[in-house]
Image (cartoon, rainbow, N blue to C red):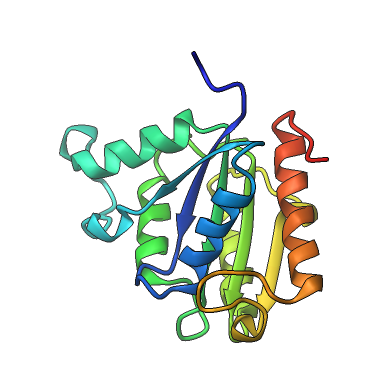
Length: 182
């Protein structure tokens, strides 16, 4: 039987096992399991560098899989750190592979940037996502500066305002997919 809940593809810009962003996604997957099917996609580290002009037949299988996953998801949740005041290279590379497709066009996307500061990466990610046609709103965009003081090393959201903000973001994303969190 098909799961009646929306399917959300979650992508972390932090690829290490100790990444706060990966842990936030794991916590959200667990906390919202009754409201959505969340799949954490962790293969962006395996993508070759994007090369403009790559033909469809030359697109690697792992990238085709990613584009299919994005296309088949009801919504996308990206949670990313900031590296050197910018988007982590593996995440930027993955989004570049989507440039010549329409998989993000009008796709509901929520963005969490969780970093020490994060402003530059957040701004850059919003620009890239809008450029590839993602459907974003103020309600589905959240910057968490000072993440280490707001999220524990095991991914528990410890700061109440942050917990509420993340809940509001998830509520807005699910509402845009036709599912409201109580």
